[in-house]
Image 1: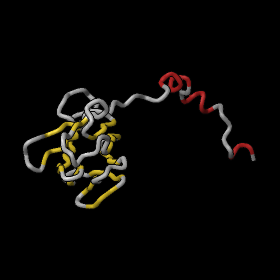
Image 2: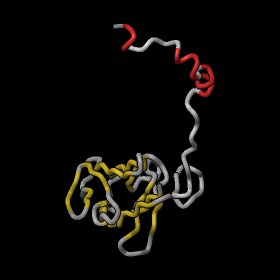
Image 3: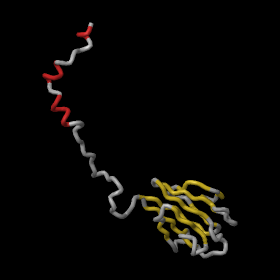
Image 4: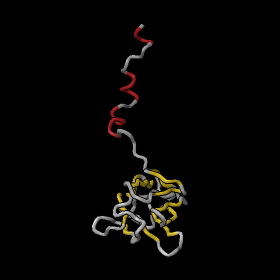
Length: 138
């Protein structure tokens, strides 16, 4: 899954590649560093799992907002506006652009395998005739 945060100013696109991304202004601790005084040292965390993005505010002073609403945690959908204090991004989610084989495309087919092929040979019509039916037991 391709997950990106695109600055609403259009000057920055950030690709979210890790399952957990710590956001803040402290470079020793944060994966995504936003050098602004309005951003807390450790502001929030973005989690990527099963094709979804989640955000959680870590008690920041100026808050984390999704579509203008201050949140402590929440799911992110494509096109959502995500703001760390006054720094705003648009959320972009889509299929991965690399060919690592994780995605199943329209051209892929499920291979059909016969179930228990060795048992099928053992049960031919002659052996089935030897099994008494429910009607014979009366």
